[in-house]
Length: 257
Image 1 (spheres, rainbow, N blue to C red):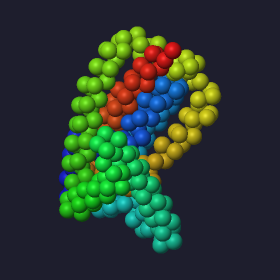
Image 2: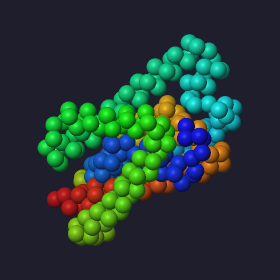
Image 3: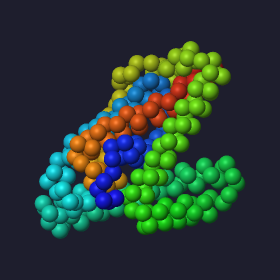
């Protein structure tokens, strides 16, 4: 756990990068295009709330188990082996699924851009991730997260404004706030809320609690005060990415005939 000595800025960038799953990079644009400000709003707000609400819970468990490593470890001490095994099954299942999502998206993207074989790319990506994780532990993950977050912010904040400018500027974005159909300009549209918003909110708010990556980052922070700072700043840094990428969806909707 990097000597439990990660500072708030590096921790925040790591938290934000870890919460930006591959789908988050395109779902924000997709929702903005398909369902306008309503669909995008229901995607953005629960994502931010999940990080902010997780922080006090992590603070509490870290206070109770200051030298811990995982939530299942805490559960084992409180509720015994049987409940611990159930938590391990859930944690392992989620890690496999989340890892598969990243590898699938990354490999497919590289295949499309370079023409390399999908399976070969997937094997290379898995090998790289395994190598730096085994050699460097959480510190290596935090370093790569900081680099990833810097690249994501740098590229998004340069390319997206260029797209918006070439597409007609802010007016095109405004024209697309209702989505491609123009029907979803109301942030509290009931159909979007019941068909997408409420279910995704439940899932997203529960996500950090059942995901080991957030517990790792909570336990590797230098102090409990730094933990709160890191998750708060991490939520802000995360928000910049989907908000920026949503502009692509609004532009596309604004240009859609």
